[in-house]
Structure formats: C-alpha cells, structure tokens
Length: 272
Image (cartoon, rainbow, N blue to C red; front, top):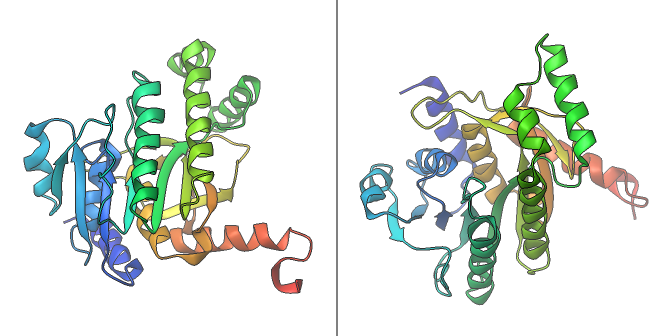
C-alpha cells in the first residue's frame, strides 16, 4: 500500500463524521475508481453505477455494490435511500447532451425526489472563460515550464467541440444550483493519475468560483476533495476551482470559503 493511499484513506476516515449511504455515479470511470478506493475503508456504504456488467467485479473489489444503470434513460429511483450522491460520470465529450447533461439532470431529479442530503459534482475548469482567456492561461502555464503548449490542446480549444463541452458543463451546474439540493461543485483542472498509478499528494490550490489560471490535479486529490466536502459545512452550496497546490485539502477549502465571505460587505468576522 502506497503512502499516498494510506494517507488518503486516513483522511477519508477522519472526514466521515457519520456513516452514510453514498451513490457514486460513474463508479467505473478513472475518478470514480479513485473515489471507491478512498471510501473502501470508511464507515460509509457505497453503491457505484456501472453500464457494463463486466465491471461489477472491479467495483466490488473496492467494497462497493455495483448498480447497472444507463444514464441515458429515466432512472427516477437511482438515488432512493441515499444520503449523498457523488457525480463523476462523463462521456469523454462523445455524448454530452445524453450523459453529461441529461444523465446529470436525471440523477438530480431522483436526488430531489428522494430527499438526498448532499450532492457533489465534478465540472470544468473553464466555465465562464472565453477561448482567448484559456489560451493565455495555457501559454502562461507551459511558458513557466519552458515548454510549448501541446498541439493537441491547441486543436481541442479551437474546435467547436470545446465550446459545446464547456456550455454543457455550465448548463449542468445551473441545473444543480437551481435544484434546491445541498450541493458542492468542483471545477477541476486537467486530471492526472489513475487508481493503478496514483500521483496525488493531498495538496491543492482552491478558489471559489473561477480561477484565472490553468493547472493540473490528481484524480486522487479530486476524490479526496469530494470526501472532505461531504461533512464540511463550509462547502455547502459552494463552487470551487481546484488545482494541484501546496495547501492541505481541508485547509484550502475552508480558507477559500472564509476569504470569499470576508470579501462580502457585512460578511466575515466583521459582519453583523
């Protein structure tokens, strides 16, 4: 067992104030499997959605119960009996309307119907950014490394698919924010690592809303953000951008909300 996984699991246990029933939507994806690994030794009961029955064995190996579901079809009772939903499903840009937006909306509807207490969702770093802004952020990031921006990124940003992807993710955020659920949204940087090759350090940079910079973040660190936010009152009804950084995850998230509140007139320590 790597030191990373030991430390992450310790953090998962520390963050778990009460045992909960958690639904991981997208449980066999790269981030989903990282979540299952982190939750494996927690007191929570975990159900993970899969599309292919062949993936059931992988999910069970992390102590989760597989639930075969097609997010492109109605699933009104998918969240029945759950205390929290972790939504990390995605189509890789192939079926944005059907999965990334439609699937999310269907799960949100079920969570509302069944009174789910927490809904945590992964979204895009680029919400609210113009194409020119993102290009400038990429050039600044790679320039500091003394490297050129990879041609594959240039092509992706210039494509119509990029604008559709960001637009779909933004619509999904809006649906969740308007749902009345106790949500947290994480706009994650470029994802790295897998459950087989974990690369997280448990350190991040966080900002509420949008950060005007490009960066990368380990899928394990994203997963730990989900687990930490589960029982963190400060994360309720908040949207964070998260990148790899130098602060511990809990400290970064709490500090970010405190900074945001102190910037509001009448808020923070000096408020009424």
